[in-house]
Amino acid sequence: HCKGVVYESVSSDVFTNLAFEDWVYNNLDLSTTNLLLLWRNDPCVVIGRHQNPWAECQLRQLWGSKVKLARRRSGGGTVYHDLGNLNCTFFTDRKRYNRKENLELITNALRSTWPGLDVTVSCRDDILLDNFFKVSGSSAKLGRQIAYHHCTLLHSVNTPELKSLLHSKKEGLTNRATKSVESAVKNLSDVEPSIRHSSLVDVIAEQFYSQYQPLYKNKVYPMDPSSEVDWPGVLSSREELGSWNWVYGKTPQFSVQRSHTDVSVLVHVHHARILGVVIQALDGWIDTGLIQELTGHLAGTKFWPKDVAEITEAFLGAVIVDADTRQKLHLVCKLLQETLS
Image (tube, rainbow, N blue to C red; front, side, top):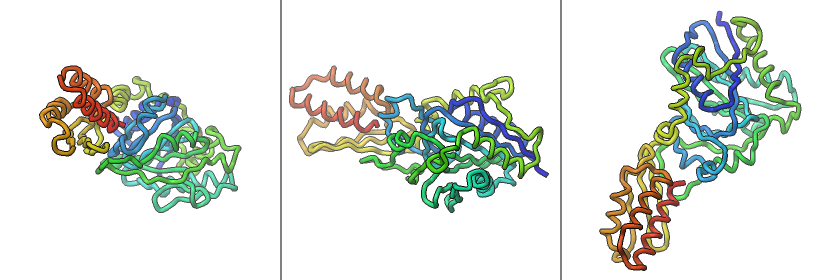
């Protein structure tokens, strides 16, 4: 019969915790063991593997804050994490992968300890409070041998921050990436004020060990996911997951448009680089040669405020035109900057 073990990460760095998930997925033999990893992160927004950060969150606001942006290796939608959210990752042999069972394990643990919590598993694999508020969302990664299913559990998250950073209403953006489904969220502690991170860890671990015989002792094992000695290669994986090329560069192709009375700017973006820029205006509004020169400089550039600003400023600095044309070029460059977040 299958045995179980529960680890709790001592790190609150999102990239380190995601790298450890990756390490387990790539290195462990779980043919006879189920591993439950409990972890939490400092404030961050985590997008799914195939998502577009420009469509999913308020980037300017995020860039101006201490909140990090991460991209998971699993699919699904965008979530906000802070220390008031507990993440549970269930690692199993591929053949034993069962999301519903894992979610039932969590809801059973919650109900048995706090009978006042009305928690149920929805058909979308969310855990709902009072059949309406989302307290947990799931995503998964299935490999040939190993599968993992991870889910959030909101117990005392900063909900105003969550709402201000996540959104999917972005004007002028066309996008083939996976879109998030917006939901009303609530914290478990709004209903049961006694709920704490530590009490959740204890009751979920207890429920897990009642279903799977402990591999070692019936306890939660603290572990350091950044230990290169224990998990060789985990730090280079962390570096990759924290890199611009992964977080932004893996964005599927999209376009974003900004318009003004006289002119509109459409930017096509692939892997977070500018594929091309289309500027439309009435005939004779501006010399098309100038526009072609500007768009030529932009092709291939990173779709990033600093990189685009460098090019537009150099262009405006070098071009010799009359005051009226200069004003129009400034407008075009301003619209370009607006597409970037």
